[in-house]
Length: 299
Image (tube, rainbow, N blue to C red; front, side, top):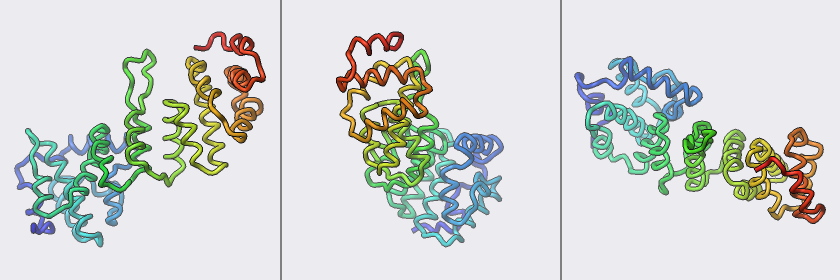
């Protein structure tokens, strides 16, 4: 088995293109800034006891040698160390014409399990904001939901843009594809709220079903966020509002709906009365004629 603690056994000999030259390092810092100041490899290095943002990208060959030494001297398992070195070799492969295969050869020679290769390749694509390729790896059934909150946050904050829409509407396909495939259990309120916001703007019924997985207090917060998302898109109030008011709401949800639109933050929206009237028709409290008159101007 390859001795990965020997620098020359891991990295290409001097003379090859340096992925961490000024141009490469600048590109990496741009990605770091776009991803909120922390790359996924920063999080992995942090688990090895290497402070985030201090060692990657390494500066020149001396910087790479220093990073290699820090990795090898950490108290992490051999698998963790080899995984990070594999990530660094993906950087080297990327800058060479025809894509070299140093990373794959290194993985084979060190016996790095396939699932760790898939995980690190997925995180590498996340750090390059190549989200489509990242998700192809990170939704592999062999993987645990590693960094699920952070992955979800990044995907929701950087949605695709639906160019066929005249309003350049955000497309959360990748975020929702990751959620449905990985079925992560979120540990942060930020990830939960962002994912729910993407669900609410994409599929009202699915968002309502999702909210019902949580305890009452969280459910109420999510339900009100769903109603708010409908009010935030007045051009779609008719279609999306109909989907919500036609749902079989529980007694609690009915109470939250009425309270939010009559006395809560929702009352400030000009669409609040329209939703109340639409619900009134569904529940038989209002005639359909009254609701239709109130919906004039909404699609």
